Length: 330
Image (cartoon, rainbow, N blue to C red; front, side, top):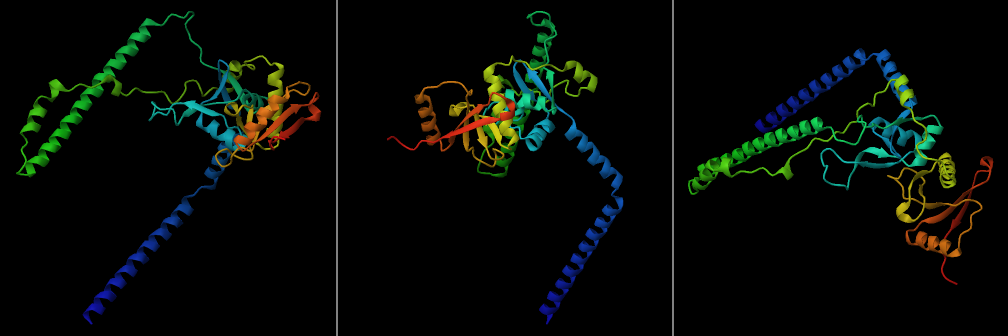
């Protein structure tokens, strides 16, 4: 009987606790619903809509179109199907090249399509303020002093951390009567004279943001640049093919390692494999049959279809596509 009473008492206490928690959650939900301001939600949606409609800023560094803002990277991928290639280092793992970060380098065709559709503005990259190639001696000396100060500070912190580790080990040894702490005391006393902090272990700050990104409209118009490279026949062919494939909803990346011009995906490359290797060929060009045989064998080895893309002489007629698949020797 006593066990049954104790059990009933525990059940009643648990039920009361659950009821109190449910009441608190309900009150909190009601307070949040009361405090919620519909006007603030409307303003947030308007700001978000303005950011999506505002043209992204493509920084042209030499002949490489780059995107630096994380919001621009997300916008062009989700809304415009632009993939690009990350070429920057990660702030927390700068000494590796397996995983990369910003900036995002665009294909020339990607940047040109964004500019022609009015969704991007090309901005000149930062140029040197010096008139000649001589290095500013004062800036270099200040940077060297900054590095030396950072090295000394990191060495001091490393020495303190080493001392704390030895003190913890000595404390553990003192608890155990069978062990002696004399070697640890000797190391601790001679640590300051024997400790050396290698320069290869020094951390160096890397800039993950780029200066002069928040341009006003008049500054952006003044810095706007024209297309950085001359347009020859080959680039025009590649651009027309890229433009036509993007209008059909395909995602496109570079296919240099597959011997073609583009890799064509039915959706985002993070979710799909490429189905085609696009090779851009002028409509009236002549090529030996051996080139097509090599392409067909290559496509069969990587389980993709070779797609010959030839823009028509007039833009109104579009692009002519011819698929090639290897079926074996006769």
